[in-house]
Amino acid sequence: MEEQALVERARAGDRLAMSQLYQAHSRRVYAVVRRLAGDDDLAADLSQDAWVRAFERLHLYRGEAAFGTWMHRLATNVALNRLRRRTKRPDVEASAVGMRTHVKPSDEAVLSRRVLSDALDKLPDGYRRVLVMHDVEGWTHDEIGKSLGIASGTSKSQLHKARARMRQLIAPSAAATEAGNGLP
Amino acid sequence: MIAQPYEHLTLEMISEVLEEPELHPEAAEHLAACDVCSLEHSLMRRTLMALSGLGEMDPPVDEWERVEARLPTKRHVIPMRPLHVFLGWPAQVAAAMILFAGGILAGLTFMGGGPDDAATLVANGESLPSVGDPVRGGPETRSPFALAQYYEAVAGLEQLRARRVGFGELLEDPMATGERLAWLDGLIEASREALASSPTDPAINNLLFDLIKERDDLSVGLESAVRLAGLDYR
Image (cartoon, rainbow over all chains, first blue to last red; front, side, top):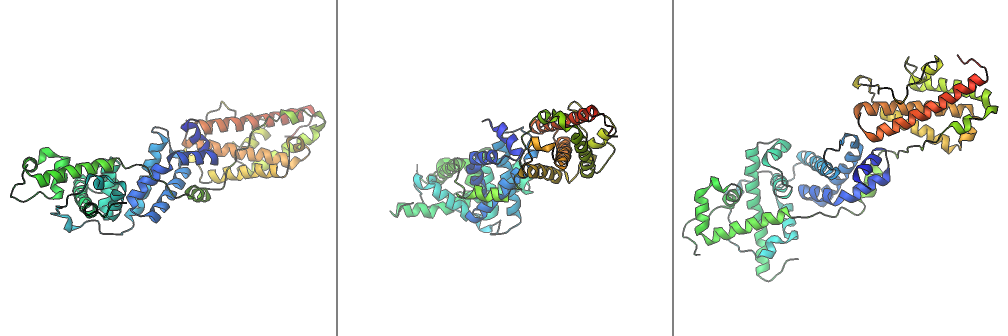
């Protein structure tokens, strides 16, 4: 069945249609909120909130974009709004300035999804949000700035610091690989 | 390539060169001559490529159950069935008059008795709003109770079904038919309000179309029944 028909049925309260929309998009939605949250429990809450909000506000979906795009954006906004209200780790770390790494990681270590995910989780919240939005989700600095209420220049600055910290976080894992400890 | 004996670029600078190389010609020149920084540059670029390729993730296995549990009470759209079947029963003319009056009363109660109410229009012998009528209800007429009204009407129709009041029994149960008219009016009003917010929504338009047609069929049938009985219901 075409997605628009599913959306119309879901608008009318059809739970089966809602379930089908959920099944089609839940993995993508969960991925973005999980990466923004950096934490499994929080991500589970955020993802649930996003879906409940989506079905409550389905009448606002005009069909200009694909449902998946609308849902993805809504989930991102739900996550960002919620994350903005909590402080888990400091957003700005002066120690990021001048960071260097001289460890030579293997390609496998750099590209391992698990290593990347673990490193993302360890980033300070502010760094992680900007890096996920820019480097994973493909937002521009202007879009990030508007969404987070910061200047686009601040977004750029945060991004470079986040990447630097990311490389530092990846390096020890890579060193372990080179020492023969292996990576999962 | 041999590393040069000067200070290496910071990771932030390497990121900046990746983003906007034209803004950092000196750093780019250093990268071309330094093995260490060149490797870092390459690794960071590969890391960013890997980040952009991170795929989807499985949500918790019970997520849908949790989402569903938080959704509003399940809404049912009552399947609309033609009412002329039972309206054609000539033996029920007198009962039809009572039913119609009951419908008017219930409608007035439900709708608040405004001068444009469907029940009032019927009572005044005027035509009910039909499918072709322009949709009423600009922002000033929207009510925060529209959704509650919708749920209430659906719940009312569900209760009729739960009481096993079938279409045949409706004429034998005056209050049931009166309630049905009232609930239909309630659904129509709620749908009109919803349509005022989303005038082009095909689902709401279709629902409103069906509801008005059923309500009109019911009302016209009852009017005919009353006339046949030679009774003046005004």
